[in-house]
Length: 63
Image (cartoon, rainbow, N blue to C red):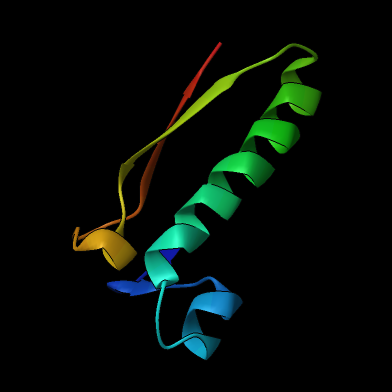
């Protein structure tokens, strides 16, 4: 999630280094969430991340 050019992940605020890796955690959690909601496997792609230098956090969900 992204609010006002700041990552909303509570873990990102606590970590000093390796914060970019948290996007993989989000990717995995979103894969589980959306797969359950759609009742079928989905692909999740982190398109842009403020932790990786992007302006926004943008996640692409594909069925």
